[in-house]
Image (cartoon, rainbow, N blue to C red; front, side, top):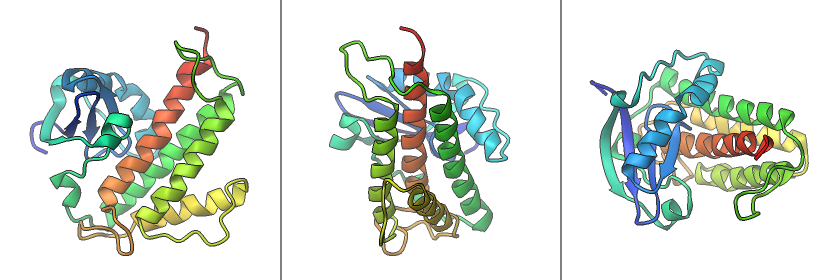
Length: 220
């Protein structure tokens, strides 16, 4: 997008998400648009690790470089805490290099989650009200969500065992392979999500929990 990084905004009365539409996983939320954009800008350095791991140059500058491309009303899912809007820019066709870029960023998001998990204690610091999952429960939650995400992009799950490392590796490989195919911008055949939105949602979920684990690994 000329003039800045294209940002999609989805808003509910409870929560707003700001999503960088060309950088899957760089999504943050806040109580309103200003708070969501501030959180997105603050996460740029963290996201830079992911972009570098995917072999991509990433120089977002500052908040002034975030250009609102589209605003949409959010859904109950948005209010609950996940980016759910499919923006007009998500309907762009993706050529093979562009699709491979999506796949690389999703894989890098998983690698970042694995890196953080490997450094984190099993018991995480509790939230302000004493809530929050511990490390292994978060990992199990992410894997469970990925089973649902796989179905949204037309993948079956014959014989999938969420407790088997090999099954998880195979599932993630199948997701990346699917995202890395050129697309006309419509829903992935056999599924419901277009590739650009699918990459954003999948990478966001991995990174959101990676960053949660990081934040809850240290002292109060």
